[in-house]
Image 1 (cartoon, rainbow, N blue to C red):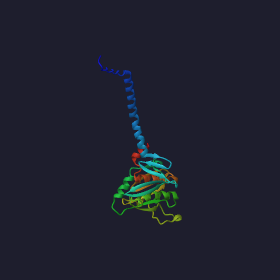
Image 2 (cartoon, rainbow, N blue to C red):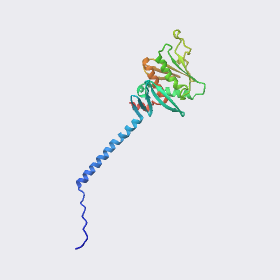
Image 3 (cartoon, rainbow, N blue to C red):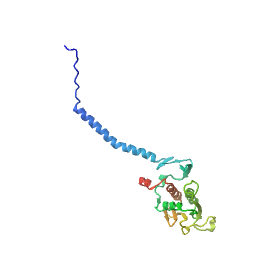
Image 4 (cartoon, rainbow, N blue to C red):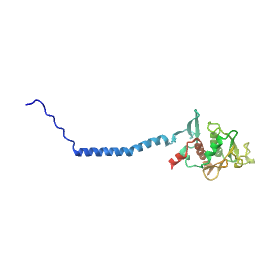
Length: 233
């Protein structure tokens, strides 16, 4: 008898097992195709947009709410750090309308050679909230944050004996290519529109005036853009 052992023949895999394995593989592939984009999108949204009680991320800009109930944005402008406070975060002002003329008008104004000036004009009898709204816009347009660096002054709509002020009268009649006039007023609607070198920052009531000004500020900084508003819709 020979001393060699015969090799055991391998049993073929059952067709049933092959079918089961193929079905499982197909299910895993389909599940991966369906879930992977969702996982990627969720991760992107977490980084790009997140609206919390004390922290908000909007278009990758990070806002932190402090004890004074203001939202603070840290920015680097021309390699210099700034911390800019706002009363509202961008999510809270997305509904404020701005026309297609305002930002181009400011851009064209910026490109003009000096001298050029701008007036932010309010009603001389306006409440403190209107004054705060005017300040919210003026601080970004003048030299506080090194963004536009315009020569910006306060103005009033008209003279009034009961509330004398040293600020000059500045209305749309005074507007011209090298002198932009910004009228802050309560008109019954929230909107920002521009015509003939005159910018109207309208609010539907006094309480809304600061919210409109913050909406304008976010537009000026490029935090809120048309693409981000399309996301909101």
